[in-house]
Length: 460
Figure 1 (cartoon, rainbow, N blue to C red):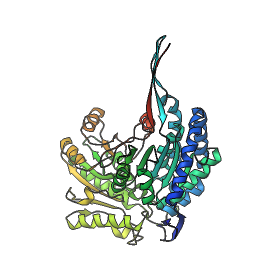
Figure 2 (figure 1 turned 60 degrees about the horizontal axis):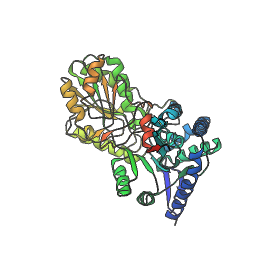
Figure 3 (figure 1 turned 180 degrees about the vertical axis):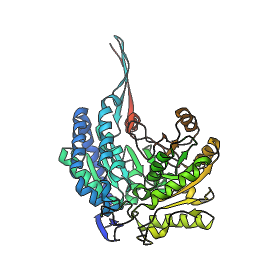
């Protein structure tokens, strides 16, 4: 009996797509083809690799109308938001733009006696394990620079968005990237682990759960395979007493609720200076109360279902536990009759919360946010750091020196001032603590997708 991966649509619970998985023998054969093809790919001029990747990205853009509807069916994002091509293109284009400089040899001497320099060598075959919440943008973070650097790539997507890899493969192959250089593969967990444990890949990049990241590292143990991980998050926003309240509430609440709260760097907890707390909460409630929960295929829908019933069940559990422990919900359920107890989940704002509650500690990854009052920066810093995760933190103030001073004390991968929930491709995308390790995009992204090779040449 052939195993398969299945996408159950959150729109109506139907089986939307299903694909057979490769058995271990077929998977090993795919790796062998990727390894063989990589050498010729790396031998091509970098300018040619860059142009082929740019063309592949553009062809994904040509498929956007199809992609937007498919994403709604697969993971529930409303069609009104138009998909991910803007960010997909921005990230790939930036990495293409900096490639020549980022991958250039570091030269130390070229004299009559010695030539000394460090080159960047591709790892070989790179495995990209991508998540479902932003399936195109998270994948391209690694796919584009890995290909440009001369690696071959095998892409394994989450079952919830299993059509995404097929779209990317179709576009990249049409652009002229060889089929064995970029492969979309359907693999079970055991087969994936077996391939990693066998040293099949030069580098593995994984975006997903903490448990998934631990499984990747366990599989790679002893192989010396590089593993980059972006795992859970519980990103805070801190509104200081000199902040622009209107800008802060509009941006932070959008950061908490967009994509039904299913954002890697979404805002999951908010701390507000005492003097601004009541005003912030009142305006936040007004914004969220105006959302329209419903079928993501309908243009008027502003918040769609969560990607899977089990994700919604976890958010409901955290919310109900918090309310039982004394938290106060501020959004009226009567405004969201579409909440069906399944994947369709109304947004919620909680006050009177504290860090004894899971909703303020565990990753929620859904449309709920707790808001706490703080007296000063010291308390805000302490609360922001009281987390097992560290991806981003959003600081709201009109004083850049204050933001820098506070930011220096926060255990996080990225510090934002007066914005949130954005990935700047010029900056390293990284985290700390249980968010994982490694770094994507930027010059550092290229360094992680290659290895240094030193040349010390003495002339005769």
